[in-house]
Amino acid sequence: MTKPFDVSKFRKGLTKSINGLGVGFNDPTDWVSTGNYALNYLISGDFHKGVPLGKVTVFAGESGSGKSYFCSANIIKAAQEQGIFVVLVDSENALDQAWLEALGVDTDESKLLKLSMSMIDDVAKTISNFMKEYRDDYGDKDPEERPKVLFVIDSLGMLLTPTDVDQFDKGDLKGDMGRKPKALTALVRNAVNMFGSYNVGLVATNHTYASQDMFDPDDKISGGQGFIYASSIVIAMRKLKLKEDEDGKKVTDVRGIRAACKVMKTRYSKPFESVQVKIPYETGMDPYSGLVDLFEKQGLLNQQGNRLKYVDKSGKEHLHYRKDWTGENLQIVMKDFVDQEDKYVDTNKEETPANDE
Image (cartoon, rainbow, N blue to C red; front, top):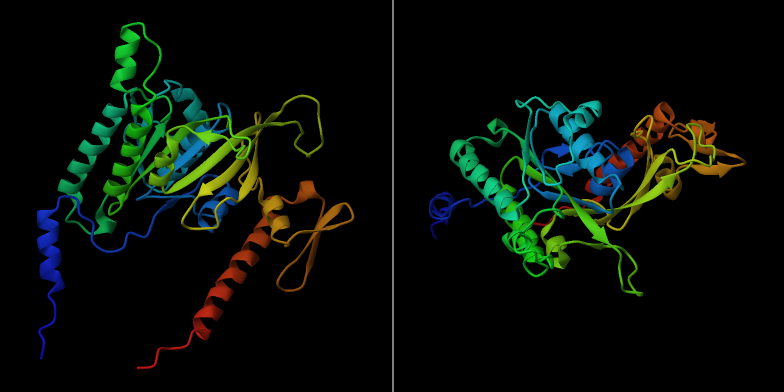
């Protein structure tokens, strides 16, 4: 009888000879909410799961589109609530302590380490050194015993290369357009490879610029296609003016922004879906913002006169004006929607024929 292959011996030899090697599948087990149920769903297919640890997520958009609001406020706050330590790299020198605290972020150094960096090379060296120490200290421990860490970089677009600095010192302001996209791609690609087997993730913001291609009018993301290929999740954002009051009535003055979010890349749901998230200046973002539009697209909420109707799984009708479809009312639809999807998955499992031996 042929002797079975000794997988454990082979695996042990590999992990000893190749530093940082990951063995087995690295499906995300820890997710951090974006603070918005609709955006969570478009990214992950789950209302409560936003961005995963072990992966690289990028929010790209024009100035004032809500990138920092999501990444440096909502996501950091949610991560801290889950006991995840956050390393915040501020390359724009724009994230004030008072602003972060006003949005619910705990700025105590036991929960948040804020670093001000301007060089791509320094950020790469920081992440690399951190991961070397992390592997040395926790590599042999059970995944549940390892501390969970989230890097947040705001923003990638403002990071400089040594050539940028050298040219500035010489009074030459052409910029390093050749090396920077390659450096950003290398940074993200290496981060993906290093984080995969551990409870460490990266969320970053980046800039976009107007497309010059008449056949492809979508805004382009700084860093080139290689940067997008290396990222696990990419959300493109545009800034629209919010001209309505708390009751949804039109007003003439600007009361906030509507962050138009389009999921350009995700491995956990259908890509290229979009949602508009309202962020009023006075009250901040409602976590339910965007759900009404999402449920209308799904055919769950239907127009009946000047109201929207939903029929729950018990057959009961819920009829409300659009402005009243918030909080508790939307929770009913969310619960039924999740129960329906779970039932669909269970039914498919039951109908799958067993393999004949």
